Image 1 (tube, rainbow, N blue to C red):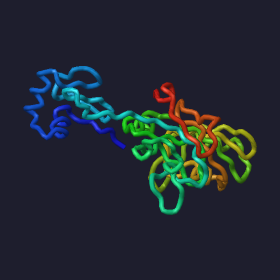
Image 2: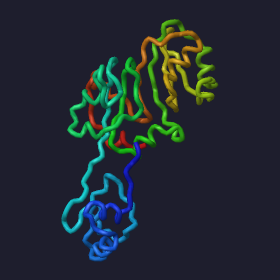
Image 3: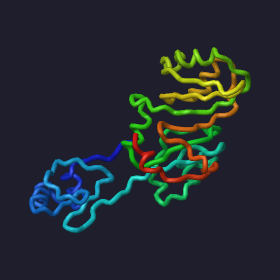
Length: 233
């Protein structure tokens, strides 16, 4: 979801129904404040979280929200669904209907799910260009061996998209469990990669996204607001 950015003069003109020449006069009189600072530049770029006042009247006062949820199996990563409970249904945050999902998880995948109303933050977090690692614990039906490590590190060709996946780090935990770190999010990527070995994934759980680690105190279905340190990318 894109951040809502606009020129200051266009925003005030739209909000108050006045022409931009009038907006220029308002700024010249020092009647417009952005985040508590008197604005002088009509072309200043604002976004949906800029606190904007005109002669003491608040025109915009939105607060960014960042939430982590422990998504259970059987809940869909969607805002509305006719058949299943959604992750939005699990939230108690008053602003939950203004949030969007940052990197969806499949119906049968559990673990860390992030939600926000900050489009710039979510875009940066999920962009392949920023190479933010996403760590998963994967449980397999059949035994694993070292050949998996090499294959994941080399990348795999996906014929449907005609791409080679970026190198992924795989760590063997035991005979049927591995930790996998991805820096991209192709459709059913982990299941398809293990599918090359004809080894079905029977359990998939996301542990972390970048520096944000699923809070161990959150049981499935619970959520909390991110800390200031967690929000930093």
